[in-house]
Length: 288
Image (cartoon, rainbow, N blue to C red; front, top):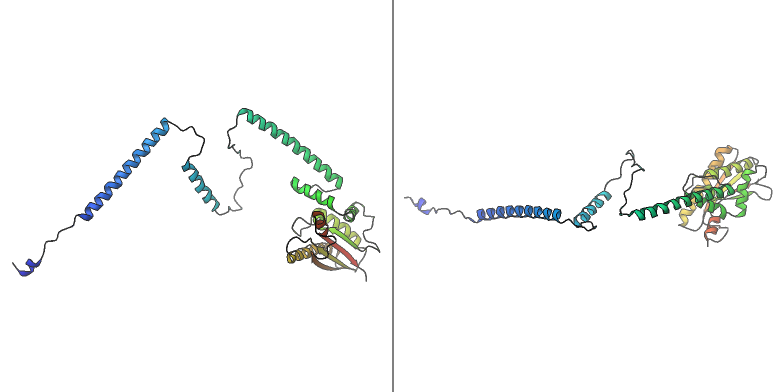
């Protein structure tokens, strides 16, 4: 026997790793069998003794919470997608008895009757004030009526001139007209309302009597908001009126546009009515 063969020692494989793998497999199988048995046993108990409570299970609450979080993170749908039908029936979330259902139906009929009465009364107010019926909701129509009633007397007289074109707006003593911005423009913008265009059309008929004159259009706001924003808003509104005049009067007139913002108020900004009076457009004819 050679020396090298004597030096070799027989290799002994350790059984630790094999036993560990077998132990993990056995535990996994035991877990699967135990879980399946528990699920079957739970289902059998649920069918045999169903719960009578109205509360939503905890698992269902968790599932709904996850769904709501996921839906909030979804991207907005494309504008090309078909909108949901407004006639979709919404199922009530509360179980109602027959007596409760009849009581609510009676209350609903009363509310519908009150709504029809309210619409009729609003239409009557609009007719009395000569306000054109807008396509907005009831709240917007009521807001417009409130603005009309809050106008100063001079502004109401200027608006009534629309129905009396023979009565002059400008005269030797009065070469300036003050118009309420809330009537001329849509809320929070420099887009002229249809009612505002009617007022401006009436002024155009008078302004054409003063050819080659310089006409200044000045815009004013209240003191709500930042001063810089108010000044820019007043200028854009005055510019919109001047552009409307220029488009309908031709190039024989010179227009001067000024945005004063919240400066030069005619009354203190200490109430809603006063702030509304300060939101105005002044149109003035400058004689040579």
